[in-house]
Image 1 (tube, rainbow, N blue to C red):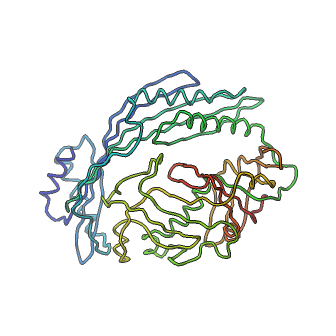
Image 2: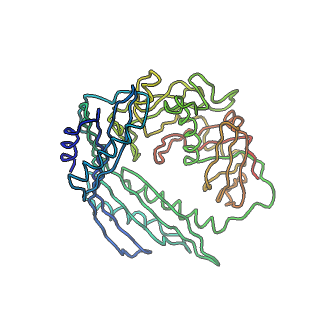
Length: 424
């Protein structure tokens, strides 16, 4: 299909350039109810998207459409004509699409050492090994093992492809007492490590038991707040988004290069690098959807914004060199040790409805569905409370852990401790 589409594009008049993005995905899927394997499924799918570019009135218009396997040549021609009309009424500032790069890449992953069904089975065994909490169970478990071949070809000599591997576990850990409590777990990874899978699911099994037993505190808690890696990824994502070329061009950015993100900081200062490749991250890639070769860029150093990052279009508008649309975040660890963290009571947020960060109104907060109050000796599960504070104050006294973890697209401190955030 992709060759047919490209042949048609090459013979279509009235377009300046074109781009084809393709993803072929082979999957092996296991579906369990409790520990009973109910369904086994294998799929082989293709996703194809076409972008056409039209120069007009010193502007560059573009429009994208999907191509399905049911399309014949006449339908593809019809879709191209529709896209041409749309592109002719879109007046983006002109820019050049990437040119003359060819490459074939394979992501590093030990998934390639296994047959897909074998790997899916091993993942399921690791998950059920963690199902050992009295009163608890994995109510449902779904395992997805994927092999993706991602390609981008354009009219200016870009022709790149990459083989990628990934797995996703979806689980419903449940605890049954006078009532039943459930949690939802989605776990994505690109390296199989039996012990790490057991650890991740075991953590959720303990959390669902703790969620059942958690109660609102009897009195107001007054202590530092600890955020784990998932919330740190969300927090830092706000600064990253503000330093993207597109945000700066559209004047929606809160920070510019040279700005101090952590004014009057007395704690650890942030150093953040946007990365192309990160072991374990499903967002690792050699190139972006435009075919731009991804280049790591340090955008925050010692709490100050030092550079912008992003794709080719908005980079050209700003007269900058593109890094490509990088997908991974690397954060340098800090100075907080476990001994220092446990030397004082703290409140650790584990499950939130979503960390709320408002840079413009200097706010950080959110509802905590499950947290732990450390009383100096042990962590006590707590629910029914929220956190709220000034973002600038929280950043100024932030302590980052000296231990790193990988979570989704984030590699950095396992946790961070903040003063000045109120627990309500």
